[in-house]
Image 1 (cartoon, rainbow, N blue to C red):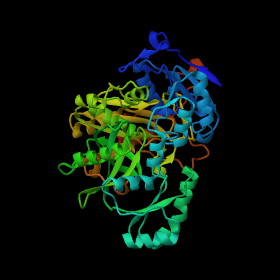
Image 2 (cartoon, one colour; image 1 turned 180 degrees about the horizontal axis):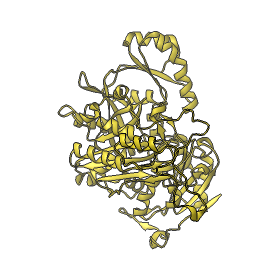
Image 3 (cartoon, rainbow, N blue to C red; image 1 turned 30 degrees about the vertical axis):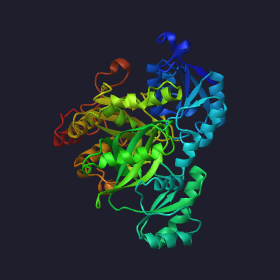
Image 4 (cartoon, rainbow, N blue to C red; image 1 turned 135 degrees about the vertical axis):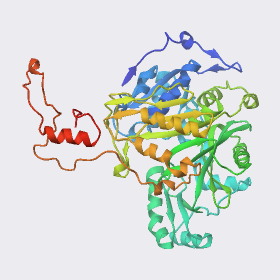
Length: 532
């Protein structure tokens, strides 16, 4: 199925002509986005500034998504979940060829770090907006990335190569010392990671982690790393030109996590020892230069708060979900850089770096359709209202894909929006984020909005000293109640009752219990006629 939406030629008359870029190369006239949701809308925003037509693809479950409305044309990938839609390489390449798209941006997740997909794009004569297939292979497996980091002198946690048996895992853990982290080499997004504090826990987890790796990433390889009890998750945004030049755009702190998945992110990372940010950037650039890294990437580190040292964790060879905080502080458009580089249209990196200077502080909150009161169970369903505060794109930026009437599908990540607050100071950015969450109104599905507000006010984040397991000590308090079993004739009717509706055929009637309703409102300090 092919759906054409808004050709865009009225807004951008030059879109139908090849446009010469900075170095005389022709910028793509059409680019396909192999993704959905907020990141698809985010990429389309940049394509409009570059005067490049955007081609959207979508699962039928996403038929009401804003990325369809914002694209110049949209093509259905069919019904169902990711396997038959956003991971369907043959379908996506066929749509790219049929639409005339000269490039594909994979966004994050799905096919963004799939070396086979990147190679298939190149073989089809379509530019893959991201790293080379070989770089995706090298950094895509954690054990090969660790080997490269060790080779180039990047600080490493004590750990193993791939383990071939439970017996070798137990022997290695005994040598390293418990606790250890058992990891899938191909894992990501918090999947395939288990903290093991004893040989018994390691034995219980070994086959489970292998199975997670095989089922989610088609790779059952596992290895062990020393586990740091009070760790911070720090990461450096890098960008390479593919010719050996790499620049770093500061350090993000992504320590506020739930089950190894990020919840809040910020930059610059607060309360680091003097000179630590520079050391992290130097290590990240050294590693990226070692492979002539191309496009945007993130080098992740774990920081031991007790011994004040950092260690290499992994490399994410794609645009990160949290890239927006870096853009807000550094005043750059990473998506634009990625597209321009893929088109051969990006100015030299030393020229770009000459004008770069970080300003202020940015914090991002991930707003999800999930119920913190039910162990963060995803809450798909119809979004009956979606009202966000006015966002100027500077002090407040909102990356979303929804509006009232959108359906949150059960097949995909239930993220609704990313709210990014920028201000000259961390305190003001935090206050701005609280205000934005307070003013956000979402109805129809449960969300983690109140949970996010509690995290921001909680001591670990508020003090600028979070660690990766700090949310385990946060007790979520819901301002709601759940009716487990309603009475057979349960009904609540407002005081003073239904009056004045004879014109539409409704006879006057009194409230079910006018005294209880008024007394209840009085106890709460409400006007006595408030609805129950």
